[in-house]
Image (cartoon, rainbow, N blue to C red; front, top):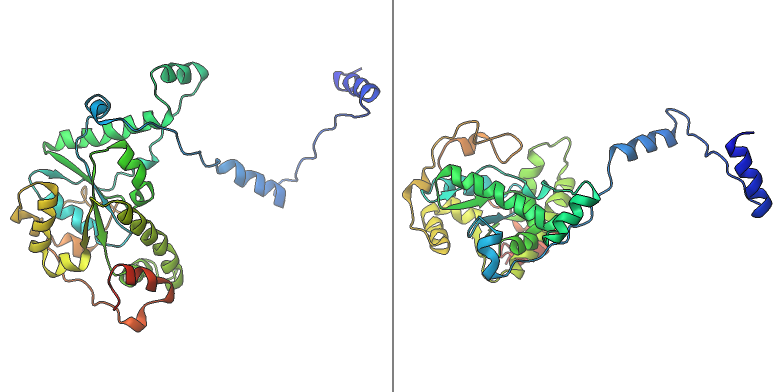
Length: 302
């Protein structure tokens, strides 16, 4: 007699229950497809716990000093701003690094216990990794400060601030409808204007939340950069405690290695090496209803 039959006989006698094999979904059927889809998409990881190092521990906890993060929506002109900043002799502004997607795992009980004994949780280990990656880039450049502009940073503003308590934040604004139009125009078929509005509104809301929370941050408008780039770069340099550098206005044509498709803007305007005029601002009647509150908050409507 099989083990399963013996087990069921004992269970029936004591509990009235039996063990049965679960039915298997047919191949190609709806349940089978759903199982495959679930298996291909791992569940989202919970936010990692971490500690915020006090000021006296920063020399031990962090290699990087006073990093600069550009907080903006997609299609806000952040690639132009990072190219201009990167032309400064003291500022290194690499392409988007997406450090928030770098994760660390303890793959067994022993490594988790060992790191725990050092006071390092998963979030702490990730912060050490992020810090090392940015510090490596800065060291290779030979410059003094790193500038990072990945748009997704807007969703991890508080964590960046906790990781680097001495970090500086530059909030880059642009007319919300101009952002939506630009995003729509990158793929008009796949991304109708209404879809583009939905996409960018998530970014815009997060930018405003971060900007409201950071009284020490610096706000600059894309339209002001294109209208008077020298004035705006002088203002920004003063905030960053570096001297103004005229080279920022003529950042030069960059190689394909520095303008990578999918890691920021790579189109012709940015490749000219100089600041190009911005598009004409939309009229009041052209602003979608859903964008009107953020337009008002940013001073783009009367």
